[in-house]
Length: 195
Length: 269
Image (tube, rainbow over all chains, first blue to last red; front, top):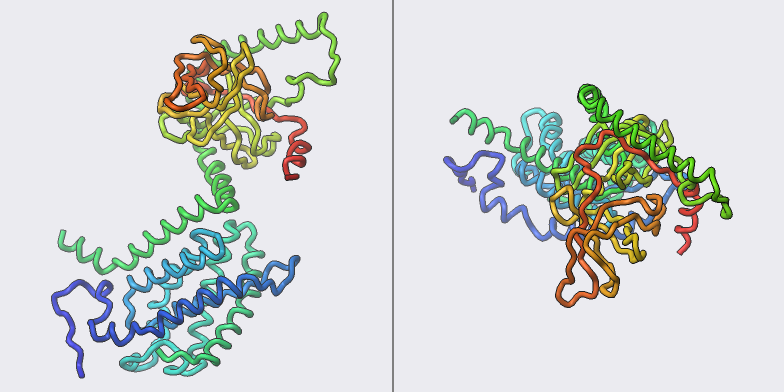
């Protein structure tokens, strides 16, 4: 059934989707996924020190997968606001007000651009979503890999807060990228999110 | 106008992004100690260079005044020197004034009109200035160093809502804490002096030496008015400062010689 669009409404970046689309997409699955991953990240993964006390370079930060898996039609403004709220929640656990927030907002801003670049020939199919189910594992690995790397690089830059220690930022980004990326793959293999 | 609105709507997400990031970074700088210190270092070394240029121009016009005040200071120090080399014999190893190494510095940035005021000095970590040192002037305390870069130091003025100085009434040693409640740079409020203390208008207020940031018995000002709030057992005392912070162009950083040793004790709970 074709969905009716508002013609003289507010511009594209404000309109989320029409009411029907909204009802279809914002399901309990999303809410539960957010709660589950935020708690997993904040309560468990935060306490895992893979590198031990003397090699503080390995942190598992895989919650950005929440931003990656949001529905394709989520508007730019909503993406940014969700990223902001998600970062706020994670910052509560990490006791670092603003640090996670800024990185989340950053990748929420880049996501639409990346999706535009990675659009398959002929455009995205209607009602498809950026996950492994719809586009295959290889596509999803590229997509999530790029966003995760950008996220980690931004995050560690803000955490270290000076580019005079660039090597430290780079090392932290690389080593954390490996473990976080593996965690994302593990997550999508186990739960196989569809929408 | 129509074009402007269309432009704003089309690039709305970009503006929202910039707005949200601004909120994030203001949070980062305000609430995270590590990032805040680095931020102060950046900003003080950046604005320090600009202010130093401007101040060198201003200094030229006030050379006369500076030399006068230096002469006064020299005279006072000479006076002290003669006094102590005379009859008095040091029975204790090092009296209170000798516990401090004094670093003289020029004030290159200063404000008194904000609720929270800061100063910038032209001496930094290269000259031995470190965070936590007290900054004073011939006529009283000025503030506390909160951040240093190699050539500059940022000072939290006593005219700051979070500044708190331990001060005492010179005549009878009752002490309290001196804070800045008003927006008047000439007045500060002395609080937590118990109400059984004998107090008169015109009493001299000095630093108490309860903290080692400032040497003890440094004159701060005189009692202007005092009263007791209803239900309180402490005086509220308005103090007129001797020092006019809006006019200073040089200051001394007081480096307490055994600060590190003292800090090592404070760590033990």
